Length: 511
View 1 (spheres, rainbow, N blue to C red):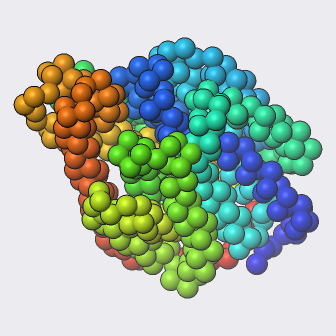
View 2: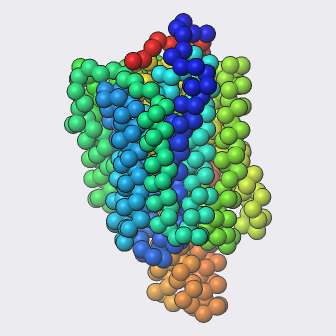
């Protein structure tokens, strides 16, 4: 039910949702569109293993660090206005990114795309909070928004594979420009302007503290693949200090960048953590499965992208399923069911032998996508419904920070774990030149290239050894994710036991 008449007709509301999903789709596709391009990028730009992770992860990392700033900025200066600015910047940077001639330049482009996306994403979700004034309709709209985001992330490798295979890796960047160009007139004509909490100034020191803290912590995670070095400890200490200062500053400010009182509601806190974990277990394994499909099973970029499609389709199914489950079994039951389903998918992936072909992997991806999708959709709906309407931008920023930080940490943490396990498995091979073995220790991609320079016997020996080491690391990654989700299911069941369920109460207007 609702206590005030809707601001827009039903057809207009759902049209606005469709328009908002378009820039959302562009930003989430960008997070994974380069995954299947890594073999070609390695050949053309020669990035190191760490640079390869930053090419994939730098976008999500910068985006996660700036989303809170982007959300509060949208509340203050206007959500429609910031959405238009973000779309324009994203298109321009995408065009410039196609000219990158080195790994360092490409990492910089990805970081700038993250800045642009941080302006776009909070605006789309907070606008929905203003347009859909009926709580049940809002729940369905958020479920669609979340499904489009998750499906776009899964569709990124498919789009990337198609573009890379036919037009080269640069197309994975410049192809976003015409889409953002289409967004500009649609948003200008159809999306209403709205504002949120507008008191106080936009605190730049808080922006810098949050960005620096997140980058420091994730850099430390990435650096552990080389062992715990002085740089690792320094980055971790600096990141932790900056995030601590950020939290303390928010508590002192009269008008903080991030309203920490949102986290006094345990449903909001659990929702934010579940979004982060749900994206962690989707993005990390997907990044390495894309490499498995290409470098071990011999798929081309486009075929490798299509091979990841079961996850995208399952997330779409999760939208309908979550809308039916939440009114019946509540947030706690939906989260536990989703996590348990995702654990089953990860165990299928872990148990799939190298000789089994595609179908066990496809089944595991589908079950993982269904379970993680249910959890993320339920958590997102809860975040936006328990937050006050005037804080919609801040709540949207927290949700999307969890989304992007989960994706970034998924690649960073699991990437470091993969590198450690992979290198431990690359023992000395008699009869294989030492220089080739040294190169192969860097990554499975480097091992494939090194094997191609050797004679058939030595090359086959090196490649088989590297593939076994990679598959061993992938199995451990799936098992680690399964254990994390199992613990999360138990924690969600325990923490939310006495939390009140969301009721269809009225939503106040946001102007």
